Length: 152
Image 1 (tube, helix red, strand yellow):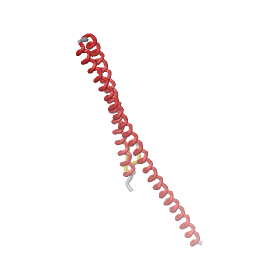
Image 2 (spheres, rainbow, N blue to C red):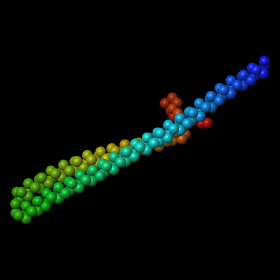
Image 3 (cartoon, rainbow, N blue to C red):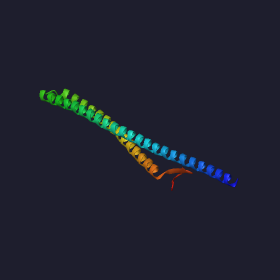
Image 4 (cartoon, rainbow, N blue to C red):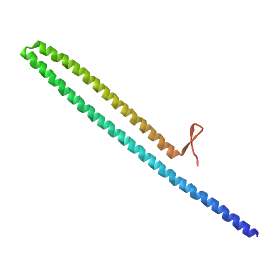
């Protein structure tokens, strides 16, 4: 009778311990999968941010080139008007050039400001990705508004 109880208790203990081991292994596999997915998501987001910044730079460059060409054309018209002796036309074109240049500088300023915001967003994402990577490597868990590394 004592043998049966001993065997039965050993069997129950091994089943409980085995279930705990299996659940711990599943938890580890799930955690590793989540870490990989999180890293992949950050990589995709950072890549998209970099691509957006690249596109913004190209767009700013194209707009600036077009603005320079337009201003150059006005300067040539001013020179032609002065060569022809038409002072009134030259003065009108100069005013037009000043207004155009001011408008172009405002557009350029707004575009550069938008680019700066995009770069700040990328920098923020890079910092957050780095923090998440460190948290994953150190097994950090939140405890009462703090983050504590789990020591095994």
